[in-house]
Length: 179
Image (cartoon, rainbow, N blue to C red; front, top):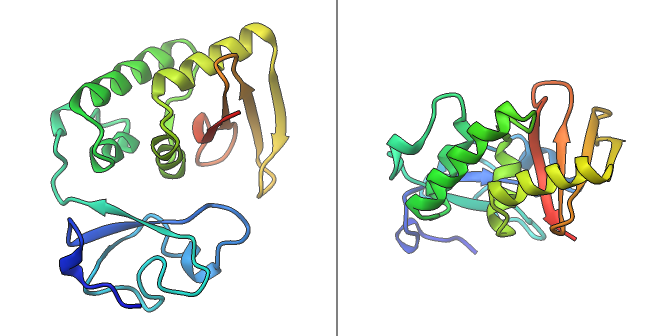
């Protein structure tokens, strides 16, 4: 079923995959790229193919809150896209500033930010989960999909945080969920 651009709140979107091993290679190649609804890639728009689980995150060419975004945290540009209020953007910025000084992650990957927003998990929840996991020793080291070591923090607040420890995403939250 072809969806017309006029049916969407924005003219462009960011292609986001589920990030697991079931994602089609041609869809994985589109991950994180910006497309126009009326000019999709050769694969079509997210969800066009049978069984496609990819999603389209609305993209606005100018962020609604550019003054709340620190240049060294490019992942925060996703917060206004998910229509999170100005207070939440400030909260996330401040939590990330504090977390840098306490050894917590320096930010989120695109996938990590998308998952946190979808699951209603704030930067404060992530920080609290990591802090309580450190205090209780509830941290596990596991290998990721591509063999990279990851730290899994299971917080007392019911949030699990996965942080990449090496590679291009070292120190970043790659996904999170509620237990």
